[in-house]
Each structure stands twice: as structure tokens, then as C-alpha cells.
Length: 128
Image (spheres, rainbow, N blue to C red):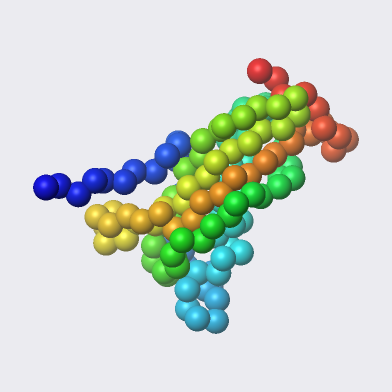
């Protein structure tokens, strides 16, 4: 019997390396750093979708599944699940790769909501 291989959902939108400067007092990667990487990845998809500036307005159901270690490659995968008049809802999965990409694990997931804005910072319609 073979084990089921779990794969990330969505498209790869961001990849970075977890460094020692990003650790908390326990030596694991700080959760706030991880959230910021997820936000950067999701914002690239939201900007591409809306063809405008975007702002994060909500983060829902953010779950940290396991710690990230220094030296892990952190990959953010995004899946656009809803487009509103001015907003976009994006599901994110964050995975780490270690041991020359032989091992991968999902470390966090959540839903980020963005609003398209104009040059004055006011909400604008998402061009479809």
C-alpha cells in the first residue's frame, strides 16, 4: 500500500528562506513573520487580479499547523476563491521544504481578503 501524497493547493505566489533573524525566543520562526510572507504572496495575486493597488482588510481562519525552522524554504500557495465588487478572497497554504526539497509539510493556512483601491486610497471596482 502506498501513502497518499499531499500537495499544495493553488499557485505558488511567494518563496523565501527562513533565516535566523526571523526567529522567536524559542528558536522557531516567528509567527508574525510567517503571516507577513503570506500577506505578501496573497497581495501579488490580488494586484494581478484587480490590476490596481490593494490593501489587506481581513485575515480569517489563520491556523499555524507546525513550527517553521531556520533554513526551511517557505512557499506560499494562493487560490482566488471569490471576487466581489471591490474585494478578493484568497485561500492560502504555506508549506516548507527541507532536505533539498525532499521533505515538505504544510505549516499554515488561512483566508485573506483584499480590497482594490485607487490612487486616493478609496475602494474601486475590480476589473473582471
